[in-house]
Amino acid sequence: IAGITQAPTSQILAAGRRMTLRCTQDMRHNAMYWYRQDLGLGLRLIHYSNTAGTTGKGEVPDGYSVSRANTDDFPLTLASAVPSQTSVYFCASSEGASGQETQYFGPGTRLLVL
Amino acid sequence: GQNIDQPTEMTATEGAIVQINCTYQTSGFNGLFWYQQHAGEAPTFLSYNVLDGLEEKGRFSSFLSRSKGYSYLLLKELQMKDSASYLCAVTDSNYQLIWGAGTKLIIKP
Image (cartoon, rainbow over all chains, first blue to last red; front, side):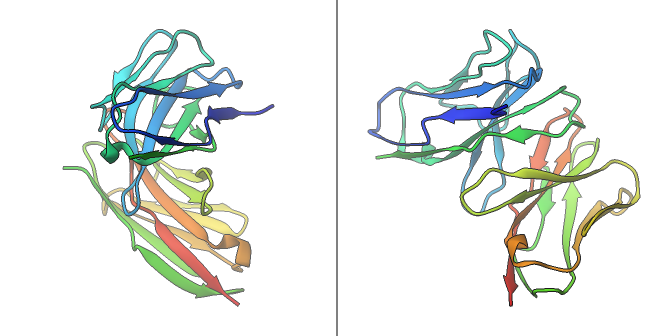
């Protein structure tokens, strides 16, 4: 069982380019999340999905979009990358969306926007 | 606003005990988590408290006081592999996790 996988592991991207970060889980979890982690700051929620077919905005959604066509996949798209989107991006999932379940994290994608 | 405060960095000696504190001010409270994150890796779950008191799990214990907006993580018999960042997170009234910036724990031999 792989848990949660993310791709790519790392990426250097030119500003203005479009990029999709992929996230797949095999635990049949209902809820999925995208976070960014920056030095000196806590994890910040970008978007979330409580169940397949639904998505919601987190604390820092601007410049990002998500979709949840099925239970397993939750891609994050940067429509036109900017240098301030340089960060480590973590995808996570949990069995439910009550906020009382453990979140399981993928290995992260390290993104550098130049 | 919502705020989670943790010390930025702590240093302790192998074999000793260390207590990492977390104070929070959030819109609502539906539980508090502690996660461990080794450098360059993903966070992994350590503990969850929703009621006041101490939860013990092997060498790690976590305490919660909801009236004081306070929690601590206690690590006993420190090992070199415990060198990591420890993240405190609170579930708010929207059932989303609000994360602290983490405490980097350095273990010295």
